[in-house]
Image (cartoon, rainbow, N blue to C red; front, side, top):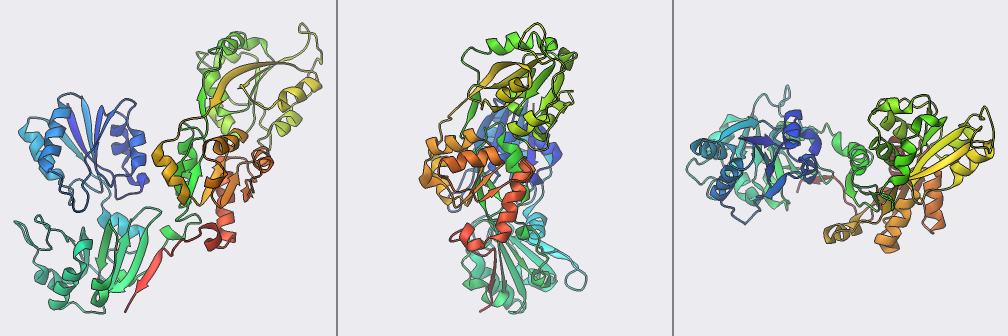
Length: 513
């Protein structure tokens, strides 16, 4: 039994280490802080017990109870992950937890994380050291063990700290800005010295305020925030907030299983993805009997046609390996479906230029033998959703193929949580990846919760939205996740930000008086 003290990074889920992510996938229990990105909990092993132990400003949480919980869980699980914001050993009280585990005879390992010290400052475009501006930096807590600036058993000598010079990085000091600046000024730091205060660092809600030490006390700052004092704070090598969708909150309406791919792509463009699944994939009403019967005869078909990644997953649930296809050729409606096939050892023989049924039907070659006679004609297996469009099957039959459709899955409406419903009012955009996600949104959330911007993955989805009376803001030229995000990013760059994000504020502030 081992407890792993894992650094989760300062906020951005992408900053967790490879080692930390792997351990989450093995853990029987995860104990996590309030500031840990909730997305990281999705990496936890299925069935892992999740234990929130967050500490909030003004609410004192007993560290001893956390220590006791870790010991208790370690005796019940082979692997326990203690997920801590930033780095466990940088103002994370990881040392106290390690001592408690050792005293109880519990094995532990430390997995370092990106600290707010270097992570948040890098995302704000502030180098901690820079030739000609600062050759050293000091990291200090602005919140002592007794809750004051310099109290506790090991008080901070602010006078000595000021005399050292260089850059000062203050963590957990938002509640004491007036006293902090007063002490540093009294110790000889200049009132004109540059200061940067970074709120919600590494998240799409990050705000950097540039000011000076002389007026730092007048600032109204939210938490969490990192304060940087020194000449480097005057440098502005901004990159994080310059991304095209920075600050946007975008709904992802795909199934919960498919949502992460789009969520990651949106995050890469600067957005916060809000997972609002409007469909869930379940077994067909016959329990899959029709599909199993067809898959048992897989080698008897000339073609097997996949129109979704869900169909790929369902078919491969029924076969042992790719050799079951034998001489059958395989068609995929688009690159995402083709990629899913490749991951299972099958390279699609046909992928159209556009990811729509009409393009796939048009790209299909004429059959060698066009016949309506089951003994003579070329047979096509089309595993599909229960309520799929009939376009492809109709076109293929018109070409002379014998098409057998097998219902592989159904889509149903998931039940949204009260928390999700409460978060949808602040959305900037919604992404639709199929006609069923459009109808699902309207059935679950209604028109009143539609955000100002609607982005669709392709023409079929856009047509479904327009038929429902929804104004489509942008449509992907490339009918893929990458194309959808690119279309939304292009729209964001061309549209007035105030129109797309009504009431949105600047992510850079200046406070000099």
